[in-house]
Length: 124
Image (cartoon, rainbow, N blue to C red; front, side):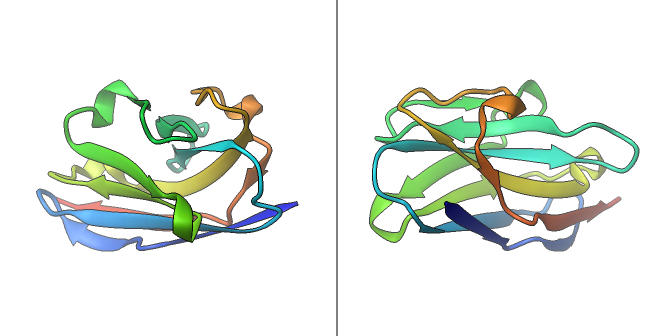
């Protein structure tokens, strides 16, 4: 079982930046991909970004593409999401997920474990 803990959320004004972190612990041996999803009030959880095991392949949802960068430090079992030029529509709880295998999926159901989430609030 893998445990995930997100951090780095907060409240910032539009145009600002945040860097989210997700640390994995427990059974972290083997290859796995990691991804970020978010859920805004009254909406379903949606894909934000994902990265494969080696870090050589990343994918982003349209609304964040060009403003966000996902990266990982395998030595620290940690994945990061750098978000710039934040907008009020980015307000949501951001969740980190882990997925077995080498191909990073954009589908929520492909992820095996989730963190508790970190709140991001962007004011205009």
